[in-house]
Length: 295
Image (cartoon, rainbow, N blue to C red; front, side, top):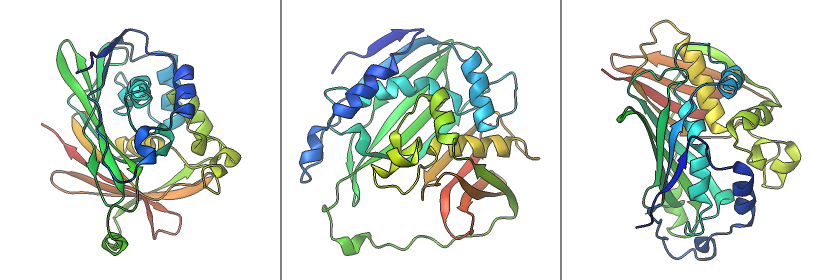
């Protein structure tokens, strides 16, 4: 098993990692007949600083109110350089630019203080073949004083069609259910660049119409994790919010093109809140999910 990469207080620099991503093709990209072995790579950042000017900019970009605790999505940003380190490692068999973020689950066990130091650990989960290609999990946990206070599972897809009969993949999507509570959500044209500047995620599909077109999109699309953070910021301000201990699941659906308008809908039950982010016409989801309160 490879030894974990360990960084103290300062995460790995992003620019060399982006350069590595541009030139990495991945061994599995050339062989659609097999499921690759995902190596048990691991990286740690000891003593990550959770506060500072970057956090203030992140709150502004995502719309979070200023509290004594950090947003539940902020550790994802702190861990991003470690994510990129593993996904651009020579032993990782898939090309980074071919990955699609399918699902995300964050569990916050307690509120994390603004400026509270964290130790962050990231590792890769095993590959799973599906009818759309190869799925794998990127697993992240943050500890404080030796206790896990935050966890995340990001499920990613590398499209590898041809593994199953196309007829087996034509499962109709579930019918949309209208929810009682609604708020508009605006995604300005520049939000991809603004989010990238603070989050470090400079995927070309989010930055500019021209760079997005090079990857087959008519316009730039919003970062999925910006949409998720914006949703949480809006929901935290609503009556009935029961944080700070909760699990939030998100399933990323259709892209939100920039600039764009969407509608956030949600409703509560005994255990949590269901939510969905729909397009302006209200007939297709950009993102769906559920928040479950923890005791």
